Length: 182
Length: 182
Image 1 (cartoon, chains in turn brown, blue):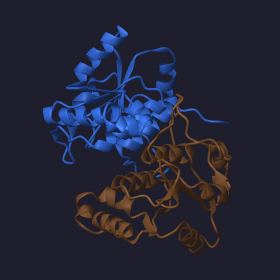
Image 2 (cartoon, helix red, strand yellow; image 1 turned 45 degrees about the horizontal axis):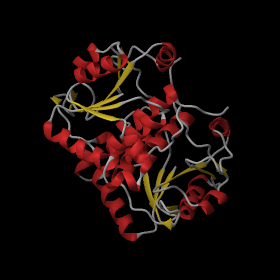
Image 3 (cartoon, chains in turn red, yellow; image 1 turned 90 degrees about the vertical axis):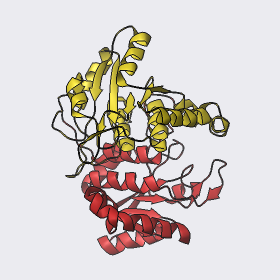
Image 4 (tube, chains in turn brown, orange; image 1 turned 120 degrees about the vertical axis):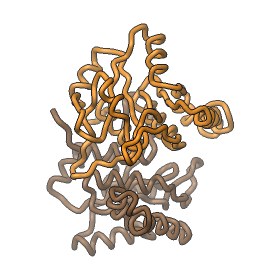
């Protein structure tokens, strides 16, 4: 899966590169590890932001944090930092020998063409898939139109769906990969 | 639902009062609003921490934040700040005229005696329920033994379940209250 900081939009619908949120790295890597995701790509084209992510990841995978909290180390070890989603696709192609199908997520229903149930069924037989989460006010329209699939939005029981990316990503992984007792 | 900062344990199993995390207030109130939770209680016995929560909540419900981001306002309006879980129970008794059944959450399986499916069925007919999340390394043993039910842990597909409280609470609400297409 990937968390991307570009191309995303701001509250006015303008294309931006968003800033990295420390807790996104922790929460999404912990969820990725819990649900058996193979790699967690963090994507930003900004050099200073890449440096910041590298510092955080190093602290928890090789620095003091890795000794203080070994379970956190295992989670953050899933992170690979990339400059663009094209680089992510290339990396998966190198690892898996075939290009991934891309699935983007969006809180709005406008572009949605792929249900959780359809995605779940595909995952049982087809691989690899790249699941892409956006930051700020969500992924750009262009990126959504280019993806193989747009996943249906997470809806709760109310007429309001403003989940954080930390919460939404966990719910999405749980719907696709979670186990529960009867 | 409630997020409590006492009584919880630290990494060494000692009883502590944990510090408030700003993003917990945002993420859990956004999830609560999305899944139709009636009230989100934030519990701490520490006066300075209560003051901090009040400042944050005021900013987003009455201050500049409420104008910049009205959907955030609607989420944080669900927050009630309380000194103890006893105060939470009293508030629910006052609002609903009957005391709530309490359900605590835990990442470990040791005390679990209530499945998601059982809880889901109960929610269709019985009310009110108070769902309690812990911070730090989790709720104290004493609190778990006192609760009416201990919910089964969220398990992913892997032998690792170290979700953040922001992620775990969203997954739990989704399993109990989420809607999805076929």
